[in-house]
Image 1 (cartoon, rainbow, N blue to C red):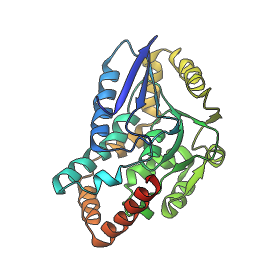
Image 2 (image 1 turned 90 degrees about the vertical axis):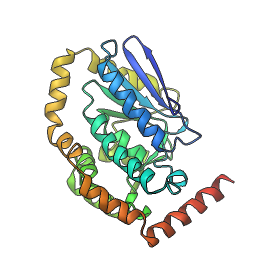
Image 3 (image 1 turned 60 degrees about the vertical axis):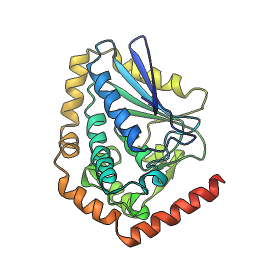
Image 4 (image 1 turned 45 degrees about the horizontal axis):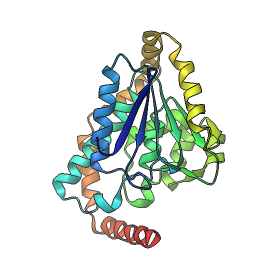
Length: 255
């Protein structure tokens, strides 16, 4: 797997996003995560998983620079797998804790939302879902996932305005569960996940699935009609123009 690293120690797997400085999500990363979590689900030697990123970035979200150049078939497969990813992560029966090293907007936030608990580093890092300002349609399944964590009213408002929160604000609304220093991030995440892992795995896992039943059902529902709308909007001239402007800004910042 070229975009992630997996280390297993004492029944705990640490999955590290490992693609460039900011871990932008391309199609290969999505395929790697899907394959990885299916393998970890089936591995009886793994009792829990921490997912983390790099100093300063958990993930900056979708790699717009790469996705912009996908052809019609490539972008269709990308969005098909991207829409499937939250369903796989949210229905992972074992404990899953997010150790958010820094910025976690958009796709990075979606991955974090699938976790049972989120620890984030202190500082002026942002997290949230800003898809609408970017020109990307928000699936109702993502709204339901967001609402499951922070409540329907806030999720509705935040999505419509593409609101990004700093770490302190995110803690206040329950988008994250704990703030800590960068040096203590993995230790804090491990402390929480070991608490989960001490319970009987069947009792814990079945209870988790019961409590998330409605969210998982919506995440795993047929989204083919939505996909058609998303693809149409993706190729709309106004969307392409907006994406191109964003990409130019990103290139200027990295220059």
